[in-house]
Amino acid sequence: MIPFIDLAAQQARIKPGLDAAIARVLAHGAYVMGPEVRELERALADFCGAPLALTCANGTDALALPLKAWEIGAGDAVFCPSFTFAATPEVVPWTGAEPVFVDILPDTYNLDPAHLEAAIAAVTAEGRLRPAAVIAVDLFGQAADYPRLAEVCRRRGLKLIADSAQAFGCTLWNDHPIRWADVATTSFFPAKPLACYGDGGAVLTRDAALWERMDSLRVHGKAAGGDRAANGHDPKYLNARVGMNSRLDTLQAAILLEKLTVFSDEIERRQAVAARYAEGLAECCLAVPTVIEGGVSTWAQYVVEHANRDGLAAHLMTQGIPTAIYYPVPMHCQAPYARYPRGPGGLPVSEAKAEVVIALPMHAYLAPDLQDRIIAAVRSFNG
Ligand SMILES: *Cc1c(COP(=O)(O)O)cnc(C)c1O
Image (tube, rainbow, N blue to C red; front, side, top):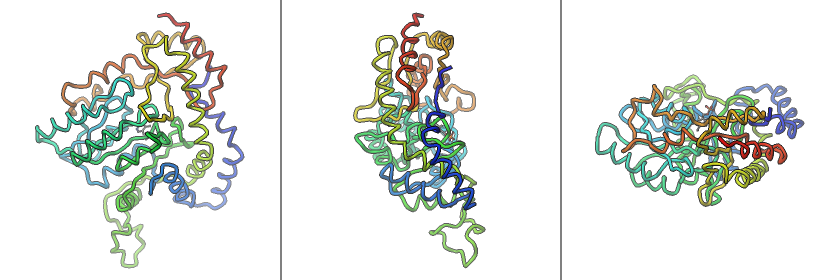
């Protein structure tokens, strides 16, 4: 079986550095909030040209932290795509707010700015909810249309979150999503482009006061710099807000620092893999991926469209080639989310794409001969 994502190839490449980094943490013993955590936050911020980064326990909490820090809650609407992983809408009801589902563009699968604008107008006209924020998703590795999304958010007074869990490192006109978004979040789940060996996440921001409130929230709402009523007590036991426990382990931070040393090179390698797929598959699929003009994708997934994608998946499986469906059922069609509002006219593009998308093996170390086998197998399917 060809691996869908080959984490072993990456590990073999950086093994000595990983072993040394892990040994250093075992030796110093600061397993929670150790020095590697701050070092990683500095490195993540620098990588994206952002002033500040805050790590946390996973990419889902990374979305919840800014919503809580902005005190978004009951009566608020948070606009997001439905063609995404559950974590994107999931964090919204946690706060008491409601997700409002917006359709995607048919070529990039990312949020449709025109439908977003229409959805905001409809929610405003109805008057039941107050439009508060937008969570845009950088699906499959590429940036959403941030110049247009940020313009809509600015004009309408909404916060903008970039859910970059699948796309940390992606750029648009050489800038990272944090240039346009109020915060950009990511996940270090093992299958993501920049990943650790467990769960982890991070939030990037340009707002120091927001960073401080999120830093407080991730440690049970501990008193932070701006909350100075500590009167000499340990701020750990003075709580300025109802928070959560969402820290990144020091071991995972140390592992991520090693993985960052090869990350830019891996993004380069992924471009070559994607280009080889595009060349080999353009004629035999309904569509191969379109990258937004000016964009560089991190290619978390390589997703093509096929009229008989289930037949294609079965055909590839007989040749030892795994595939995956992201996402078979859009979130607004799933039971827990069916009651939440949708933009005007519903989400026909999300529903249509869910029927035809299929992801092929994709990672930075996919060898050309293996990839040619995958391409030949797809081309040999006539169903
Ligand atoms: C993976 C993912 C998340 C959540 O990340 P976890 O670390 O698994 O909590 C959020 N949004 C999107 C789009 C994702 O793909």
